[in-house]
Image (cartoon, rainbow, N blue to C red; front, side, top):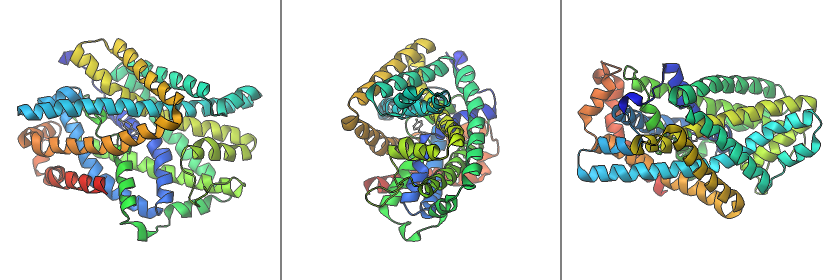
Length: 446
Ligand code: PFF
């Protein structure tokens, strides 16, 4: 079985795949709006600290476990647990992770479907197909269901092709395009009237809020969601990293890319909102806060693009291409978690696993689409606010308490022979054992 496992063919390929998983709607949509409504640069500051101090160590735990065990989450967590109880805990955490990530994908696919619809819309308008444009942009069950299916088919198609020919190939194409589009959009938007106001709202800190419990909880949730932690995604990607790679370095690069792109996205979204305001588009909700939920993406920004005239069509195209790419490189990492388990544990072929599991998740998405008001928020909060932090905590327990410390060091040393005397090994074991679990618990119970 080991010989049949996929592997990333280069460091670049892994970096694109893992940062592709990390960089998603959470970065481009979630982070900027959270920052704007939580004290601007004060949120940024807290986020940076939490991301490097809590999320990066947890990311490393997943990558190290994955590469050591060379297996899916369920098998890996059992393999590193010496005791019977540890193995049982591994089984439970692995399964809860697979279930959680499947539900995350089920709501993520709905929002990603909107992104595809809004990406096609400018093309429809360009050729004068107004009725098509109206269908694409009006919130309706049929449209939402249709694009969920389209998005999931794309995800299944990439995952069916395997680690190197699917995940790595597409992430290596899509991620550089995402970074380029993001740069071009920032440059353009910053030249427009009103943009500087937005930049101020984003970057001027309101330090009175740094120790606000709400801000801490939001920043930690955002950091865990953004780095795709706790659900086995980074573990499975870690399992495809070649043994000669230096894990602390590649993990650090993924964190820097993820955080860097979130910070940059803030330089696009906030200025764009204030440009919209200057163009007469309302950007504050009834409570006086910035509009941050779905309305931001499916109504405020499209209204801004419409107010830009002809050029707005191309700006809309670029923006929704960016969102679609960000979604797709994240969704493939989510589907890979149950697929890898099905392939390795049950010996079912990759293609069959991808199609069957993809279809099951699509059905869950469709159930949510049909019962949107009662189910959507519920699924989002159960998975991201309850399950994900607890799973993150469980991974810290595996890395700090359950797995043998010498084995961890041996695994790191494979790609970094001097690791024992390096900074990472001086800090990380203590962090993952004490600081991370306690901090996660404190923030969780806030
Ligand atoms: N990190 C992704 C984002 O920021 O949008 C979301 C995500 C991807 C969460 C993969 C969980 C996951 F397993």
